[in-house]
Length: 515
Image (cartoon, rainbow, N blue to C red; front, side):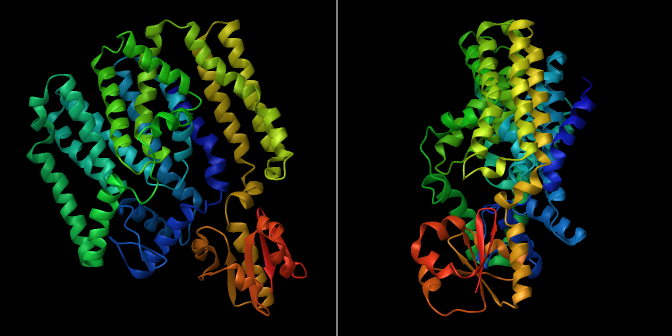
C-alpha cells in the first residue's frame, strides 16, 4: 500500500471523531476555560482556572489554542484535534523515515502499527499537550542520531537543543529530561560519554537557557514570585519527589504499558524481550531505540506523579523497535503468531460483548446501529487475522489486517458521536440548561455532585453555583435550575422527595431540574 494512501486512510478514519466529538469534562473543558480566561485577562505567560493559578502546563499549546479561538471566534473541536493530530503525523513520518534508513521493508508495518496503537491513536485526537511534546522529543532524538553519525552537523547541532526546549515549553520538565537521559544512556552504552559536550555543550545550553530566561521573565512580569515559585518548585520538585497528584507506585508502568500498547502489547514487548535475551538487538538504531525505551521507563518510574499517558514518548520507539526486530525472528513463528492470535480472539468477542453491554442500564447508550457495526467490523477482523495466521501462514498480512480493521471500526464508530456525546461531554446538557433558563427566566445554575462542573462556564457563559445536599433540601428556593447526576436522584430518598414534583429533563447520565 502506498504511504500517502496510508496517511490519508488514517486521517479519514479519525475525521468523524475529530469533527463530531464533544469536549471531555475532566481536562479538555478545563483547557477551554483556561484559554477563555487568558484571552479575557490579556495573559500570555501565566494562566488561571476559575481565578486560581494554573501553572501545571507551559504556554505553547495554550498559545496555539488561543490563536484558534481568536481566528475562529469560538472553540472548534476540529481545530483543537489538529493540534494533536498534526504532531502525531509528524512523529509517524519521522519514525518511518528513520527506520527506512535501516530497512525499507519495514515501512508499511511501522506505519500501520503506530497509527493503531491504542494510546497513540487516542492522544492523536484529544485536546492535550502530550502529543506536541512527544513530537519535539522524537525530532530532538532524530537530530541527535544524525549528529551521532556526523550528518549535517551544523544544522542538527542547532535543531537538537531547539527541539529539546520546545518539548520543555510544550508540557514541562519531561520534555528536557527524556532526551537528556536517553542520549546519555546511549553514550554510556556505546562507551562514548567523552563526546557528551558535542551534544550538550555550550551551544545547546545557550539555546535552552536563553529560551527559559525569556519564558521565566515573562512569567515573573505577569504573575510575580508566587506564580514563578509554583511553576519552578511546586510543579517540578513537588510532583517528582512526593506528588500531590497522580501518585502511583514504582511498578506502575510495568502494568500500564500493556494496555497503552494494545493491540500490539504482546507482540512489541515480546519482541523486545526476545531481542534482548537472544542478543538480536545489534544495529546502532536498535540499540538507540532500546536505550530510549529502558531509560525513559526507569525515569518515569522514579517520578512520583504517574499517568499512563506520561509514557507516550516510549510508544513510537517500542513500535519502531518491533518493526526492526520482526523479520529477525523469521515469521511465521509460533510465539509471534500466538501474540497476534490472542488479540484476534479478543476481537472476535467484540460484537457479543457490545450487545451484552448495551443491554445493561449503565451502558445502554451503546445500543446504536453504528456501534454494533463497528463491533462487527472488529469481530470480522479477528476472524480474518486467524485465517491469515494459521490458514495462509502470513504474519505480516495478519498485522496489516488488524490495523486496517481497527481503522475501519474507528471510522464507523466515529459517526455515532452525536448520539454518544450526551454521555461523554456536557455540551448537550448545558445547551438544554441555557434553553430552560431563558424559557423560565432563571438567574442561577445550581450544580450538585458533578466533578469539575465549574468549567461549564465555557458553555453557559456564566459561573455555576456548587451546592450541597442541605441546599437542595431547603425550602423554598424558586428561580433556580439544578443539574445533578441521575443516579443521585435515584439513590437518595431525601433528594428524590424534593425533586419528584418538579419539571425534569434527562440528558445522558444527568438530570436538569427546574425550580
